[in-house]
Image 1 (cartoon, protein in one colour):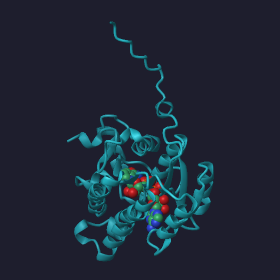
Image 2 (cartoon, rainbow, N blue to C red):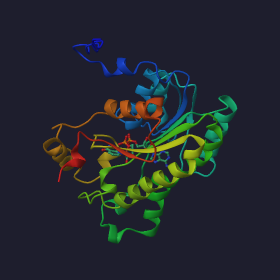
Image 3 (tube, rainbow, N blue to C red):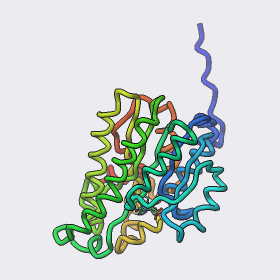
Image 4 (spheres, rainbow, N blue to C red):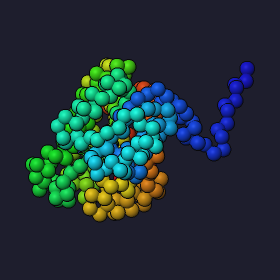
Length: 273
Ligand code: NAD
């Protein structure tokens, strides 16, 4: 008997078409859109394109005119402000999700903050207050989101945060965010172990350098960009759509055998010595 020939791939392979509507019916919260360059926006666009329904938040009133139109374009059915450093705001968002949706399938946490004075200095010199603030906004807020999401993820779920290679290796000028992202990646592993039995999976996605508002806070960020373009096997930067596609894969059932990982989307840069 001759084997059935494998269908040939289309000449121009459209990765979005290949993923299709695999997220249809899934409901998720996306935190971290500041503008159309935000990694969170790249994730939201792909998640929506693959059929998910979204809740979208913005930091404060100042951010609203930039983010609300994007949330509307994404057809977000729950929207509002969320500053994770203000007591009660995270809880209020999850209360609303519980009331309006009654359940939750995924959370995208794509936020980070560190006071400039601390971020631009040596780790050795950082202040107690600055370190605590960076940890609270960039790491603890994810832990808290996992806690609040757990009872709503009645049919399993996926929670994803954004990290960076500076968590693992010393990257010049990433400074204090290195230890903060290391704590974030370790938290992902521990929470994945804790929630795995309930079918809830937790990931960190680690993009290569992208020109966003948060990135502009890192001094000499242009050097990181140039280095990535020269040294990554892909010889280019990744874009937010590429990050979004990986996030969609993780949220979808195709990744059901994975949890607790930090997944690089950096054109292979982290593999280089
Ligand atoms: P961005 O500026 O577009 O997004 C950062 C977001 O964090 C903004 O929407 C901002 O409002 C939000 N934020 C800050 N403090 C907050 C608070 N107290 N409460 C709620 N939200 C708050 O930049 P981005 O590059 O898209 O950053 C998203 C994530 O990706 C961050 O965790 C960042 O560390 C990570 N990351 C970025 C890069 C890069 O090169 N841009 C690379 C790897 C990882």
